[in-house]
Image (cartoon, rainbow, N blue to C red; front, side, top):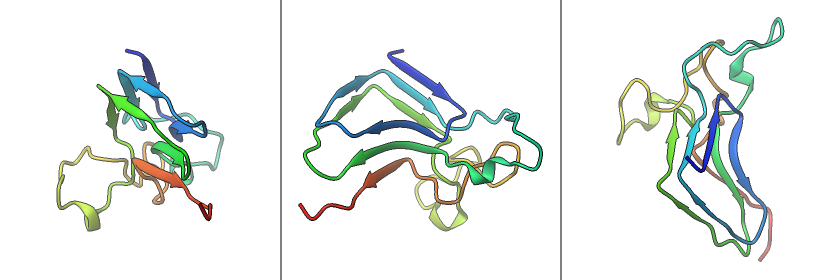
Amino acid sequence: LGFEAHDNGLAVEALSGGFWMDELLASCRTGEEVVLPPAADLTSIKGDGFFWYDTNQAHIISNSHFRRCGYRSDEYDQYDSSPDRGCGDDAATGCASRSTVWGFLAHSDQ
C-alpha cells in the first residue's frame, strides 16, 4: 500500500493545492479497544477520513479504501445498513458523532 493508517482521529488532510494519493487504506477504527488515559473514551475523538481546504484544490485519490470512518447513525443508513459501516458510539471502539468520511475546511469567500 502507498499509505496505511489505523485507529486515528483524521486519516488524511490536504491544505496544499493538490496531490495524487494511490493505494490508501484508512481504517479510522479497527474495532480493537484503544488504550486511553483513565476517564477518557473514543467518543470524544473523531474518526474522520479525508478533509481538504475549500479553494484551489485538485486532489486525486485512487485505489483507496476508507473503513469504519464517519459516525454510524441509523438516521443515515439508506445506502449501507451493514453493522460495521462507520464507527459507533461505544467508549472503547467508537468515535465522535461529528465524524465524517469526507470533510471540507470551508471558511473562504472565494
